[in-house]
Image (cartoon, rainbow, N blue to C red):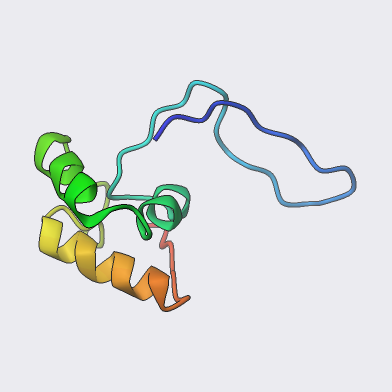
Length: 84
C-alpha cells in the first residue's frame, strides 16, 4: 500500500503518522488491513505470495493463513492494531 495523499483535519488531536509516498506492507497496520479485507481472494493470495512480509512485533502476522484470519476479523468489524 502506498500513501498518495493526506489531509489534516482542523481541530482534531489525532494525526496520521505517515507521509505521502510512504510504502506499507500488506500484513501490518490497520490502514492496509482494512483495505485488503475486502480484496479479491485470488488477488490477495497472489499479493501475499509475492510480497515480503516482515515481522515488526511478535504479534505481526507473516503467514498467509494468519493474515487471512486477521482479515476475517476486520470483515466482522473487529480490528486491533497493537503497538509494542
